[in-house]
Image 1: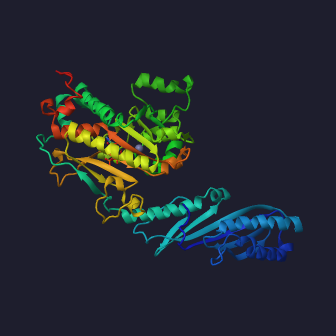
Image 2 (image 1 turned 135 degrees about the vertical axis):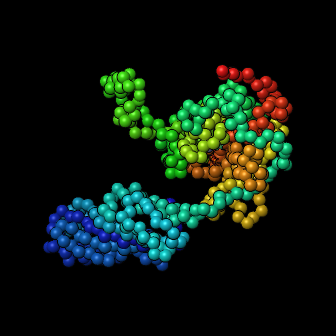
Image 3 (image 1 turned 90 degrees about the horizontal axis):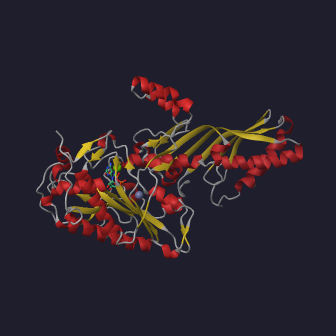
Amino acid sequence: MGCREADPVRFELDGAILFSADLSPVAEHLKGYVGEIEAGPLQKGVPDDEDGPHVERMEPAGQELSLVIVSGRYVRAHEALLRLRKELSARMGKEHRIGVRGVRIDRYTISFSVPEAPDHPVRVPFATSLDFEGDTAVMTLDDVSEDFLSRNYVDRLVALVREKVDAQRYEGKEEFWEQIWTSTPREMPYQEDPTEDMARRGWVQQGPGKGRWFFRPQAAAVIRAMERIALEEVLRPLGFQEVISSSLVPFEVWLKTGHLKGVANEIYYFSEPATRSEEAWEELRDLVKVTREVPRDKLVGLLDAPRAGMTYAQCPNIYWSFQKRTVADEDLPILVFDRTANSYRYESGGRHGIERVDEFHRIEPVYIGTVDQLVELREGLIERYKHVFNELLELEWRMAWVSPFYLQQAGMAGGGEDEEATAADERREGTIDFEAYLPYRGTREESEWLEFQNLSILGDIYTTAFNIKAQRHELVSGCSGIGLERWTAVFLSQKGLDPAGWPEGFKRFLPELPRGFTFH
Ligand code: ATP
Ligand code: ZN
Ligand code: MG
């Protein structure tokens, strides 16, 4: 998080140390002490060839010693101020019976390098100003509290500025995408959007609410068949065990996984009642009885601000369940899956058909083990998935590495932009997307293929964040997202809605489609 080793950085602090008595009688002594402390204790920890902190200006005025301290990365100005306070407190107490009451930072100016000047303004919280001079960022903070410093907010603000500058550089650039494997083309006898077709035939009904579908018996049967295929042909043969997780994810869990930094705008937040008291809710109930409407503004007043959200992906709660545990070696790799918690995402304008919805059904296998165990598992998963998509569903599909561009740059996913496609087993970390051709969207070449599932090994970020350990080994983790609506959308887009045209492999899992209902 802190400053990168070689980057130039400068901290300038304008503040004061507050004493218990007037300083004018001891002004000369004070100057002597500061000089002595600056040359001694303030330089502790500064490498020989580097500049330590420097007191540029000091001015006793009444009970305050106002100061300007400038530093580089070693013993940063605010650390120097705190050291100075400690040392002065000892000397002033002993020699002059004057105590230190506290410190104050009026203005803190931090200059640091960024990869290049950003094109658009960058905003960060807390900063009074943030300007760029070429590839140097100059950030000022006013009235900085000790709490602010001790919580390490300064380093995080520097990291945030760099992250936002970086994000501007990658804006508009395509995400990294590198094909690993592709199936042979298949004949596509069906060209319709299957959701529209299903709606016409009464297999599905849009709603209730936006981005949701009511699956009538025929569609429900297809989705459940997909689920059985995933369980029986992929997960059970590889030894995955089922777990059942809550659909609510407390913020503490998402703070660890980073979801609240990454996808805050896609989360469905969850509110508890602020109280269960009959009395507090009486007016709302009465209004509902009389107006037959829900007074939403009144309702908001009866709710607590959210502390949790609905499942976005199942893995965060799964990691939570292993947190601070030391797993027995013989239980490695941990292979579990959840298929109970539905996923909720605010997709807004992106919604389409059953393939991009706000509430969906997904099986999420999660795996925790050594790097070697997980690389081997990935091979096993890919082999089983290939079996399902090639032999049972007979799909036209492909696999690609899709690690985001910035991760690629940071060398996290291995393999460079220009390199040949890397076989799946040669990379230790990264995400593979499984994509399928949807004929209703246009030609193979020009239309966008649909990601219908993915498979990741994510290194030690989650095992570290949740402090999951083994007896002897270093643990890494990963997950795969089996989107049942997406499997269904892909299958029906390519094979159509007439069971007569469905492959035998699939029909083994759904020999007969339920009748459903006809409405007049
Ligand atoms: P996309 O790029 O399509 O939005 P994503 O990268 O957000 O997908 P992940 O977070 O990787 O998706 O989720 C894993 C799987 O969950 C996807 O491969 C897909 O099967 C399913 N999925 C994700 N979002 C949706 C959605 N809105 N509707 C239906 N299924 C979804
Ligand atoms: Zn996951
Ligand atoms: Mg998405």
